[in-house]
Image (cartoon, rainbow, N blue to C red; front, side, top):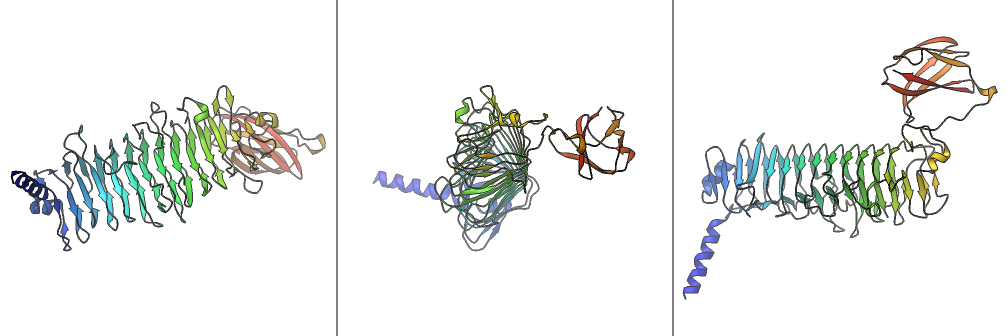
Amino acid sequence: MKKFTLLLMLGCAFAKAQFTTPGNGTTYTLTSLSATAPDVLKNMGTSYMMMNDITISATDKLIIDENTTLSVYSDKALYVFGEYHTTASNFLINAVDSGFPFKGIQFEIGSVAEMKNTRVDFGGGVRVLTTNFLMDNCIIYKNKAGVSTGGAVSFFRGEPGSITVKNSQFLENAKPAISSSGNATANVSALISNNYFYGNNTDDGNAPQINMGPSGSDSLKIINNTIIGNRALTKVGGIGSSALAGGINKFLIKDNIIKDNRFGITTYAGTSSGIIDGNVIENNNTEPVPDNGGSGIAIYGAKDVIIKNNEIRGNLWGVTVLSNGTVDLGTSENPGNNIFKNNQNRGNTVAFFNNTTNLANAVGNCWREDELSTDAMVEAVIGSQTPNTITYKPYNCALQLAVSETGKLNSRVFPNPSKNHFFFETESGGNIVIQDLSGKVVHSAIVNKGKNEINTNLQSGVYIITQQSEGKKSNTKLIIK
């Protein structure tokens, strides 16, 4: 009888300790919620203290309309089945004691969530089970595994256009910053844009800072982010987009800066395909064993991946293709315009390695930045499992071939070196282009027979002037002081 009475008392205390809104369509603020459940949410005057779990029921809403701090007891969580909106301009959710994280925030299936202008410190992450989620101008700092175990913010299902994470920071979280379910039907086609990532996955698990699963019929979009690694973490990559457990995976990874990770970008599985365009991928080389990783871009079995306009420098490998993957690094009609430099391991420079028997188009790339290459120089930094499977000509940063005397124009530049003001003298009219040593066109002009005054706004360095006129061509070195 005494045991039954004790259990009954504990049950009543537990039921009293938590709070669930009544589900009658009520809209709460922190002020009204603390007045309704003062034993669970205490109004401290300039801040609030959450002492146990709170659940917002399916038909109710919680509006964060105060610039304030909500401090949460260890292992306690906020569960939202209804709606959650932030109208405040500066809201902090943190642990009462940073050494004892709170459990986190969980948005349940069917809920609507808008997290704006919010900082979440020392929690258990944000677990998103709904397909209606917006995070804008937030900071997620030093969260550990709690309600969210796969990432500081984790997604489990999606619909086209329904999940957005933008203008936010993810700093030194124990797990990947953002993750999504690897389930074949997860279909998380999120937009992740204009965010800053530093040193996430401090547990040093074998996962990138952005670790995404299948997107479904729509594309995952990772655009204009900065992803910087902590070089002491040797197992943490930059971006991963894969379909390891099946499902369709499409992606657009564009205009990101990815530095100091184990690898830059990787994608797995034959049902993955997409575009990698305009990224700066540098010094992703913290992997101590080159055979285990360290690529700027690694394609494992993914199909028809378009790789263009990227700057790939200082990684252990440039681009690698494995497990029967296929890539397009450029064709004559649509050149790749990728730039490679100093992707090295074991004393070898490897800009591109095709570790499959598939053909790979790789036309119109600069394989050795700041050098004028010959075919032999290019072939020294690209390779394949099977000979003659890479089409790489024509390429940028090429050493100009000599022209025959009958096809050569007589021209000269003076003064040379100059300070962006010089004269180009030629025996016939035509046009000129000025290229830097990567092959990028930095100036163009129409020129007349005789002396032409040229004004540019170029940085100091060496450039090549190419003149074309009536089927003839000349190349002249230009030095800008």
